[in-house]
Length: 45
Image (cartoon, rainbow, N blue to C red; front, side):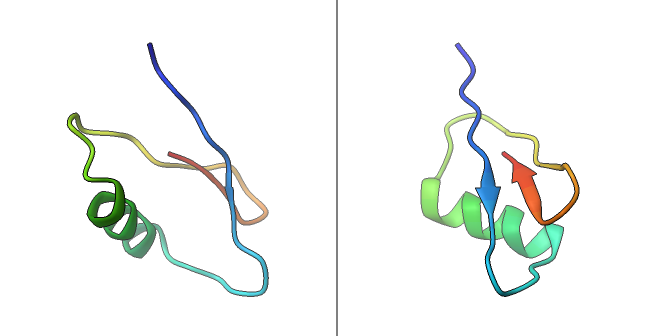
């Protein structure tokens, strides 16, 4: 089963690579994941 969350940053811009690395280091996923930029500062990991 796949789980999707919406990540929204208020007051700052963060790059795709930085966010991907940050999520990887904090969550330590057991499987690879994809990160989608869906405009207006929202990301779907």
